Length: 553
Image 1 (tube, helix red, strand yellow):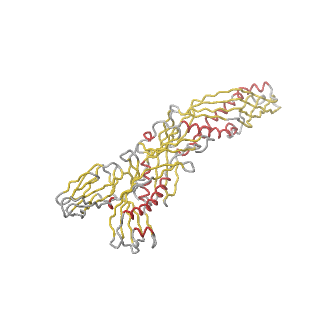
Image 2 (cartoon, rainbow, N blue to C red):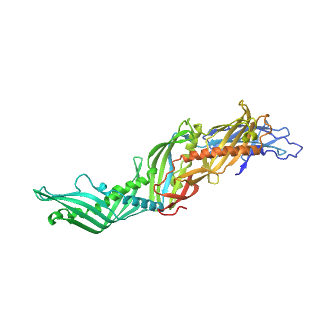
Image 3 (cartoon, rainbow, N blue to C red):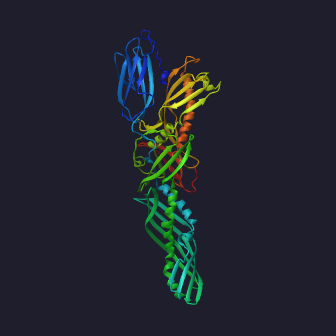
C-alpha cells in the first residue's frame, strides 16, 4: 500500500546560513470541504519568514507573493475532488505545507434520477445460454393450458350432423432453441420433435344420437423462426415476436371410430393444430419467458438497508439497441437515501453507448460514475459516513495517538466522489476526512486531515451478481493541530497505523454502499471471469458466461 504523509516530511536538512526554521503558511481560501460549481479555483493565503523571501507553489504552479506575504493563485481544475497542495519554501530550503480538498464541477441534487445509470450488453454467447434456459422451460410447459379453453377446440357442422373436438393433452419430445442477435432484432428459432396432441371428439350423425371418439395428432418435427424484438413501452421492457414462419414434417392424424363424413368436417382444422401449438409457443409463451430472464432490466422499485439507512431504489429501462454484436439496454435509476439532507453530487452524464460500444461475447455491464456518486453523496449527506469511535485505556491505537485519547471522531468534509483521473481511470477520492482525537473530558489531543484516492474493482459473488469494491489507497495526511499534552508528537508511523485502522472501516463501509447498487443481471446466465475497465465515465465489467453443463472455473 503506497502512502505519503507530506506534513510529516517537511524537514529538509537546512544548511544555508544556519537557518533551520520553517516559514509560516496560512491558507485562507478555499475552506476545507468546499463544494463549488466552477472550473477554476483561487487559492489565497499568507506566508512569512524571518530570514527572507518565501516562494509559494500550489500543485506545482508558482504563486505571486506580495511584499506583505499575501499570495493568490487561480488555475483550472477538472471536475471532481481536487487536492490542493500548497508549499511555502524559504531561501534555505525549509518548507511548510498545506493540503486540503475541494469538490468542483456540475453538482446536482441527490434526489433526482440518473438517465443512463446502468447499461447491459448481452452478447451472442449469452443469448445462446438464454436460449437453452428457455428451451428447458418450454419442455415442462403446460401447452394444453396455453392453447385450450373451457369450450371445444374445434366445432363444425350443425345441430344434427356435427362435431366438437376437445383438447385432452399436449406432449412434446425434445425442444431445441437458438437465439442470435442480428440487425434490429434477435433471430430466434424453436424446434420441437415428436409433438403429440390428444383430443376427444363428441359428434352426431343424426339428431337423436351422440358418439365419442379419440383423435391423436402427431408431428415428427415442428419448427418456427421469427424476429424477437426488445422495446420499452410505458416504462416496461418487453419482447415480442414478428415475422413468424412455421414448418411441419411427418404429420399424422389418427382417429378411432370417427366416420369419414364427420372426419372430413374437421380434417383441415386438425392439420392446423400442430402449427397452432407452435404459434402459441412462439408468440405467447416464449416472449414471456425471455422477459422473465430480463426482469432485472425492467421497471421496478424496492428498498435496501445500507449502514442503518434505507435506500429507495427505482430503475427504469431506457434505450434499446440490437445489432449483430448484441443487445444494448440502457437503464435509468434513482437512489434516495433516508435522511439525505439536500445532498449534491458531481454529475458528468454520458450515454451508455459510449461505455459499451464494440463486440461482447458474454455480458458487459456498465455502471456510471454519476450513479456511484449519487449514492455516496446521499450516504454522506445523511451522516451515515461519520463515525464516533471510543477507545478503552490501553488500546494499542490509543497508545500511538496519545494514551489519554478516549474518543476518535471521523467526519468526511466531502462526499466520496468517483471521477476521471488524468490517466483516464475512474478513481474514488475521499477528501479531507477530519479525524479528531479527544480525551475523557472532550479536550482535543490532535486533529488530522486525511485524503485518499483509490481504484474500483469488481468481482462475481456467490449469487452470480457483480459487485464493485475499493482497491488499495494512496493517502495524504496532515496534522492540523496537536496538544502539548501528548507524550510525543504525532509521527508518520502513528498516522500510518491510524489510517490503516480507519481504512479498514471506511473501505468495508464503502464496499457495503457499492453493493447496494442495483447492477443488472441476466437470468439463467452465469457470469465468470470479470474484467474491469473504465470508459467514458463508466466502470465497465466484461464477463464470460457458462453454458449449462460447463464446469465452473
